[in-house]
Length: 204
Image 1 (tube, rainbow, N blue to C red):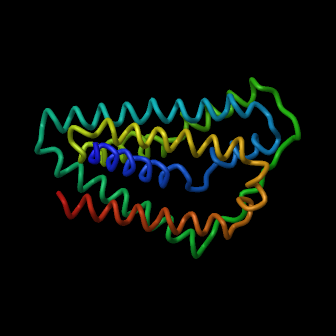
Image 2 (image 1 turned 180 degrees about the horizontal axis):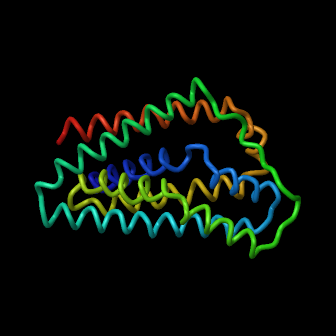
């Protein structure tokens, strides 16, 4: 039980660090939350999409590792390198922030347009496949039989983050719109990613 809880917590933390990095999807969810426009639909799409991608990552990478155990070393090195690169980029944003996360656009919008935009931002973004499918799948594979518990923790992190961002936008927007807040988040993301990357490489 303790191992399962620890693994789920690790999945939650890993998923959160990959999700909270500033980007178009988070900006869109925040904007919809501030406008109170199709918030439930947008949060649901983001969370369910992440859950599906995490499932594909855990199942795909995990299946390959089970079939060919020797692949684990190569996967760990590649995944570790990606995590280190992402960590370095996040650290760079701490010193060279991209700017405030300011909601833009019309005050109102249709639910259909919001849903289509959310789907496009989620599924047409190539980085989501690296982050959610490959990176999380790689780290999960290193957990062996508990990889699905790790994936569950990551999916829960996605749900919590998007729900907080969408439904709490009215309360959080004033703080999240400041570059300083995202610099702090990016600092935490950088530290976690680099630690995970080093751990994967060292343990391979």
